[in-house]
Image (cartoon, rainbow, N blue to C red; front, side, top):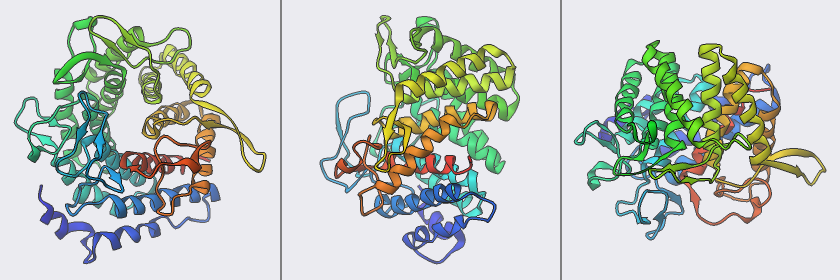
Length: 408
């Protein structure tokens, strides 16, 4: 990691990182033609970015703490093995990559050069610390490379690959597209004929094929097709979409199960991001092919997500809306991407309004004095947040506030 390069180039300003982050709120001064609600949401995104950089940044630029406050005995429970205590005191790849998504979302709604500089001078150099160039095909591993080999997850790399394509779309820098294409080669290596197709979850533990590694693979392939116009990506997107639908969709309600093990046993847990990525894939396929079956799939799945992952809520002022249920907030951010993709087709704001009302309520009722948010808590239990705040939760909320700020 070349941190000196960051220090030389960071915004071309001679001031420390904390000062820079505290100045970011000035980027979103609202023009008169934007509605007040849009201005509020964009300002929330920047304010939360300020707080996240302030409380999670480490002495090494581009690397972050996993939680705030950081503790010596912090455990990581989301890997493919036993619980892990971090030895090097920085976050794992997954929450770190969430910051990539957050900055992309801010760049998308502001087109400000400072966010472009953040990508090149902070986000990408930080991710390079997780790059494994020794095992082929090359990709990102779950922990920083200097600590030795760690597991390599297909879904971790998919989220980063999708973000590289977003950065390419926003900047037209060819190195971002090249990085995405390298990741696709790794994704292809995790696909085989076991269970008649599909991509594994973890390279080192090929025990299951998960919706979280196949639905975003379909999205990634379809976005690669958008970027390159190469038919092989469209075909891969279709194949992975249909395999996931045939193997992991619950025919009773259109939602998606979590995974299928190699013996055919299905884990029937339903997470927001799994169905959300299939919603996005269906919407992309409709855009790219014009085939109405995909639009039908998208509408069925959107309604199912709204029925299952939202609930009726009444505020203290007797205002009623469909609020997000408690659950992993990053999973919800990924689900939002699917609803946003569908909105680009049908322009129906109802579902996005449910997201917006939930997130506005969260902001106005957040009890944390540091401006951070608790994990897995939306409206019902927001005053019962635990002390520890996860980096990925903050990154996901930055992304959602930014994405929603452009919709009336």
